[in-house]
Length: 149
Image 1: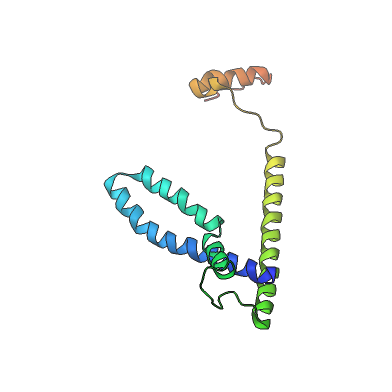
Image 2: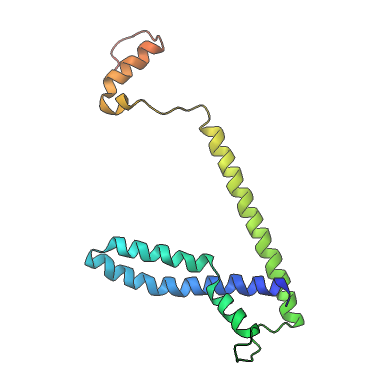
């Protein structure tokens, strides 16, 4: 079978499986929230994310269809139309992944440039901001011209 058809099925089934489980998780999380078990709802959501990342349903169907499980079906049988749709989908998907990656890299470089000259504030600034203000004025050798506050 063509790898583009496999990739198309894998992406679609992974998204479908994750979306179905998310639709089941949401009402359960509302019930857990009312009962006071937000931690459990959060843990279930973390487990749910795995179904968006790992193509469990596709692997199950692929192995069941091609490894002689006893079920003879036409689930992943290639055809010219399916091949063309798979190639178009794969090209669009790869273009989207590359565009998102470029956006993330551009954003990371912009943040790095923005925060390059910054430094963390002293812990004393949290404890006593007035003392920190006067120390900053003294260290910068600013003259006092009237009331600061």
